[in-house]
Image (cartoon, rainbow, N blue to C red; front, side, top):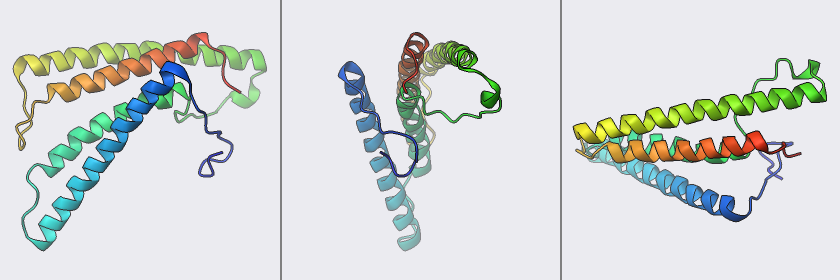
Length: 167
């Protein structure tokens, strides 16, 4: 049981899902460590040596984008998105199942559309050869990574359409 979130059980996945989660968790941890290191070096350099780390803000910006989308598949799979329950108290069990089904279908469609648009945008960035300003790093790989992770979240959402909710 996770003490930080009362009422939410810590769910352990199995099989392929567990492998994907382990990879995404590793990506998130590495990115967080990188961002912490970059920020620490930048702050120490800025205030102690009057020499900030070149491109620290830009690197953090790019890494943060990947971090957010690396967490999206896990959040989607475990149904841990932020939700607002305005009408749930008035719905019966059948209506709640229908509501959840419709939400899952809408989420899947929206994530699929977002995946396609993100991939097309990454293609444009690669075609134009867009680079970051300070670091001169190609932006397209970050955009492709974000698109792939959104695609994984789409798959997780699609599976939710056909699976009954966990109790």
